[in-house]
Amino acid sequence: MKKQIALTLPVRDLERSKAFFAGLGFGFDARFSNQHAAGLAVSDDICVMLVSEAFAGTLCAKPLADPRTSRIATLCLFCDSRAEVDALVSKAQALGATLPEPAEDHGFMYQHGFEDLDGHMWALTYMDSMPGQQAAA
Image (cartoon, rainbow, N blue to C red):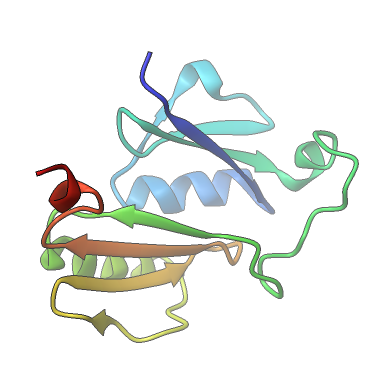
């Protein structure tokens, strides 16, 4: 089995978050969805569990950090083109996301991102070649 990562993101309003990510074109896996959570299918290899803050608080003894005031992680999502990065950022902003930083163009890498409705930072990135591709070649 190939290695995969599933992230769990606490959200204040599960239905609102589901509508936001559906508006970006992502689907949901009903097997991992109920009244407390929704399995966001970003791709065949990427799953993000959107869970209500109340339920997320039962998953760990540590208190939840507030992503609106603290950055505990940045979710970097690789895209197929600069145009895809810009299109997703524009859609996200139209759906209520904020754009805390301007786009960055490093020549070989283009990046822009948004904070979702709960303040989680999504860094959308296009690279001429993915990390590790040159070393493997």
